Amino acid sequence: MHFQRIETNIALGVPDVNGCYNGTEFWLELKVKKGRQTPLTKYQKAWIVKRASHGGKVFILNFDLGQRAVKLYDHNSCVHRDPFATLPVSHFPHPVSWPAVLNRIITHQASPSRTQDAGGKIIKK
Image 1 (cartoon, rainbow, N blue to C red):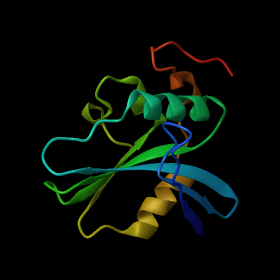
Image 2: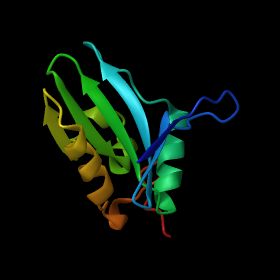
Image 3: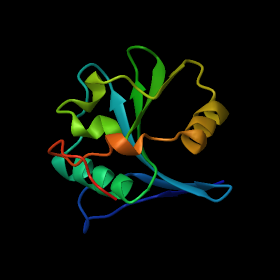
Image 4: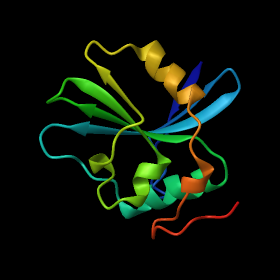
């Protein structure tokens, strides 16, 4: 397993972490909720939707401190005004099983029919 923290001031919206496990590459945008949710920027939404439209695996890993849980959202949640109002792909209560999180990321198959741009239009591959 290989993770790389991404630090960039050049490209807006690039997720926080790039990961690869057994040949499957994925991106993670990390968020923490301490009351009010930190929203995704329009640049983050655009990057996530564009990468997913080309077959990339992109997730939002949301640490909800109030619920003491980790919620995993896929790119489909980014087309909503408030992505965190949608149901997560998976919910992991405390104590979090990180192998289970990784397994869910690796095995998740997003519905291609739901791949949409930030305006809600279906993106054709």
